[in-house]
Length: 465
Image 1 (cartoon, rainbow, N blue to C red):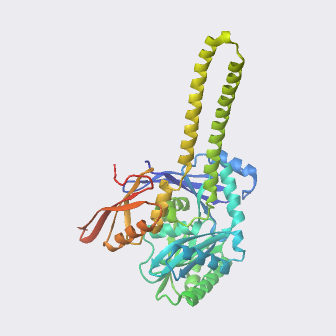
Image 2 (cartoon, rainbow, N blue to C red):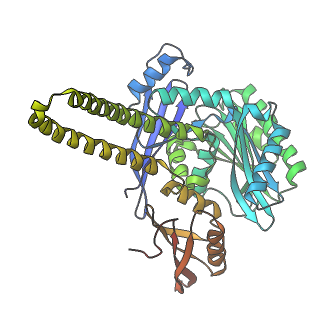
Image 3 (cartoon, one colour):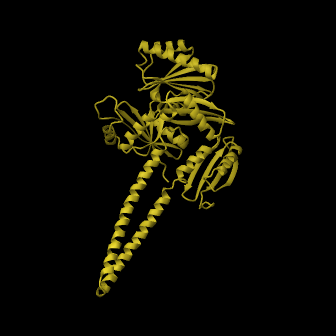
């Protein structure tokens, strides 16, 4: 099975930027990167207007694959929280309680998602995101009308965070502050020992050479960092990295350093890939475990509409054939005895039509069975990704529909592997889980334990063919 294409889409006023990637052996293949300016008079498109969808369909029809649409950071509430549990069901309930505390809107009006950042026994650090339902629905409807159904909705700042981490810009120890200023807005990320403790939007900006803007930004960043210490404690030596796609003035660096009391380093944001590429690569890396603010019923409705269209076509064909059979049957009933030979010939034709009807019925039943995605490859991968413990890396995932899933991977020791096997045995997705080899060896002087697991799907066979 070919690796799926994943496309990150980023909106910037009237610009739509997208990047398509695909996993390949040994890394990630960059397939396409484009940026278009939507052909419309307004400076900022109205995504609730049908004409915007028509423009998207006309100018962005080249977008392909599974789509991840990024949301502006200033439209999303983001919080990092430490929860006293490692149980996924309990985490979900606690996340909703946290949103109810920090959101100015009722939770029933919000789309909520979370992503696991770190987990230890009886403790989980999670990133919580909440955004108004009307924004999600408006963007989703606009892109769906254009034939570009978003499979995921992520947040701009998380793409920048991913790119900084992937390019080795995050220090291993201590507290470090990242100030990111792109075309759209200014944003702040603070990490402690490689793990994020805060994601914050500072809103639109006028640039790094405006004296009034410099003073306001420095004061706001200082206030955020002071509040941070009250919540997370002092983080030891602290440094700040400024990432901007425009040169930072000496006044800005000096003011920021004095106001915040820390050394300031300046970097060119253009050293990193584009935000849309960061979004695509983040989606490819995180998979089903990635924070996703898109409603799950979008994909279910799309599949349901497709199946309904097929069933209606088959039903119309079936009814047409059936009415033909009835009509011919009535004619046969009324025909006189003298037309017996002719009736025999017509009967032969009807038999062929009846056979075709049975074939269509069989196809309809087969389609219904195929539409059952409860044991699909995507569901299996989602379940495996959820229960995959830290320290275990999958190197191979083979799915055989209706039969089994074969996993290969490695870890530094056997303990997380056995934990993974135990977790798979507890899930109701697989009827049987077998271990077909756990072997340890040394790679570059480091111990590595490799494993192979065969998980049988309900109704499947336990042996790999």
